[in-house]
Length: 586
Image 1 (cartoon, rainbow, N blue to C red):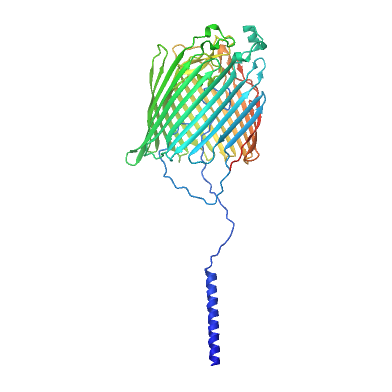
Image 2 (tube, rainbow, N blue to C red):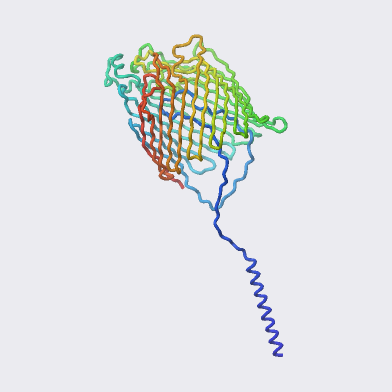
């Protein structure tokens, strides 16, 4: 009996032990095993998006009307991909936002520079902020005295999105532009007026333009081409000068577009653009009576004129057998209130056909376009700041343009552009010295009917954003079509221009820019030939960190006393040293 009990107990013990051991083995076998190791994220190489070379003129003071870019007009895309719901990434900390920017510099000729930018931070519905820019110089030229100028621009802006469907935007802007009509020497002042430089006040030959403007915009957020899209913009501005001239502008613009089926498997988009401009100009009259060196016969009685411009532009965009086709026309009408002035109707083509070849590496386009622009006091003073204070507005420039353009993507890093255009122009703008101002330092706007042939090319090399090289130029040929060729027909129209630039980004720490430009000699007033302009500009920036950087701007390193306008020489060299700073925002 005892042996039986002992054998039974041993059997139960070993059976329990075997069951427990088997259970433990099953638990170990079924446990999740976490293997830890290094993970290396790799972004596969992607095709680089090449872009056309853009040639820009960095001169802030002596602007002109000659075109320095040959970028083609591009068609709007006819395809809109369906929206994909954004993926939510958990645990990602909010990054610091740099919603402000301040830059200050000071250079020779007492030339301060200041930029200030501030905007609101993350918000799905609204954005608002302010921009302030200032640039001036308070130097003097040998034999010419003071050549001060200054430009200050202040803009308040805001945008609000209503229910993700409608965008409302507005901005308020004020601009103050100050310069001196310094285009006379001490000898001329003594010969003509019998005065020394100390006998006159700067106020006697100073110009001051003030422009206040308000813009309001509305556009829907619908991106589907099968839905109605629309936009409307209202612009109101007022320009007034120190001598009493005033120009009020009201512009109303808008457009609508709608997608429609084309053939059996294609779509097109129809557009209608509308724009109406109204200008009211008040002549200064006796306000310029104290202008230095003015002849009394130059003073006209004060008067008020009204100018209206209307543009209506319907067109369609569609794809057909690999061709991007833009087809439409532009109707224009101008009306001027002066007695005996006729109203004019204009019709311009608005057609462009483009095609991509060689696996999209070669893009060819042909276009026939046109348009009309009002030569207002505000537009002319930005081209030539030494314009006649008693300028009579109302002239409209009309042009028909025929353009051929080619863009060749040679490789991922190299791209070339070439363009030929022929333009038929009525009332093409140029300038001549006004003899009623005895110091020969005030220009009048004059207009010619002409045809202009332009041939241009540029090439750009971009190496991983670290090195960018650009070079290009234009050749111009003019043919005056007026019945009698005026003496000023060739004034201030160069035959060619050339620009080359290099940009280097070294470790996102050092930024270098070098630019060289050539502008052909030009015919000026009184059979004076303005010499060829050769200029070298450069800039260096050191980024200490994301918030603080230091910069050096170098302008006219060739130290050439060049001319854009006769009797107005430039400074020989400008150097501005400064810093920029941003305040991080959580």
